[in-house]
Each structure stands twice: as C-alpha cells, then as structure tokens.
Length: 263
Image (cartoon, rainbow, N blue to C red):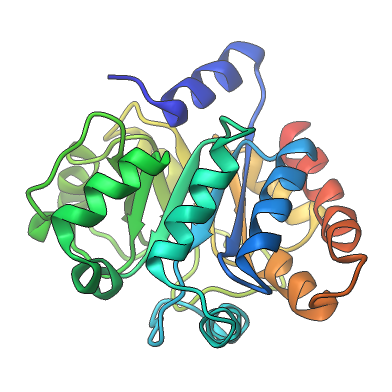
C-alpha cells in the first residue's frame, strides 16, 4: 500500500527532481512552533519532514541535536505531545512525516499503543536509530513504514539484508560518527550509493553532515533526496523564541532546497 512517502518520491521521479528532507527536533523551542516551522518548511519546498522525538540519551546525535532535545524536554515535550503536534500539522498539510526516534521512548509509551496512535495521528514512517532491522518489532501498519539506515561501514551482505527489509526509502548515513555539520562531502559517496542501488529499487536519501548549498548539490547528484538537520537546528537554536524564528530558518533553508532540487 502506497503512503505519502511513496507518493512523494513517485512525484519527484516523474518531474525529474530530487527531494529535500528537513530534520527539526519536535518541541524546540516549543511544540506550537514546531507546527509553524513544519508548515513553513513545506512552503519553502521541503518534501519530507523528519520530526525528532526528544530523548535524554540520543547516542547517534551530535551536540547540536543533543542540545535541541534537551531544550525540548525542558520545555515539556513528550511523546503524546509530539503525536498531537503531528495531528495539528495534518489539519492543513499532507507533507510526509517521519519520526526520528530511539526505541526507549516508544517502549515507555507502550509499543502497540504507540503504533496505533502514531498511525492515527498521521505519521508516515519511523526512523529508529538504535533498532537493528533483524531485531525489528513485529508490528505492522497499513500507513507507516520503517526507514532503514545504512552506514559507510555496512558490508555488502549486511547491506543486502537491510535493503530487503526496507520501505519508503533507504537512509544512507554518509559519515561515520554522529550528526553534525562537516566541511566536505565524503569522497566515497558515489561508490556507496551505487552499492546501495545494486540492492534495492527504493529511493536513497543521504544525510549527516550536509550544511551548505554546495554540499547539497554534490549529494543530490548521486542521491534521490538530501537530508539536512543540524544546520537547521542550529538556526532554531540561535533564533530561539524570537519573532523572526521562521524567517531566519527559511533564509537558511532556501539555498539548500534550491541546490538539492536543481542538481
């Protein structure tokens, strides 16, 4: 069954364009402003939004995203609050939504309850950073998919196994280590994306470390979508709850979107 993610990539493919995926931490600086930011990012050309579920121990995240999660938790963000945030977005948008999360918050919420409520809220995909695909939870829904992660160090046999379990798109983590801006694009990007394509027909999104228009352009030449997170989160952190928050974020995002789509 096709969901919003599948339809998004089908439309991108039909128009010959690459996708732009934006990550923000839900609840930073507030859940209400997360709704506003998401809708603004959609207007700016974002094709898919990744909403980070705030967690106290985000091991895959660099300092920028760690601090965003801390700010969100301090501001009172919770899993039910994030799901309500999605419901509010759905009142006026069909933008595909992926929850970027760790397993602990979901287990604490209640596994079956989380899947049921997330699907009902309008979540399209889950990107669980610390859940290996071969230990996947045996829960399936008609509308939500599990997005699989591939690393630069993933061996070919493991790559084939991960891709076989994939849906929506494959997320290629282009750098070893944690999230955060980098000075350049990994030289192995083209080779690694080609290896992934040999194992799957799913779209490939590339993230981790992309922070400039030139980097977005380079990545889009190989990938089906470019993922930008820390660069956007940094702008949110700098603006805080100031009145020009949306304006500042969109000014940061606009050249990245153009670069990705015109590559």
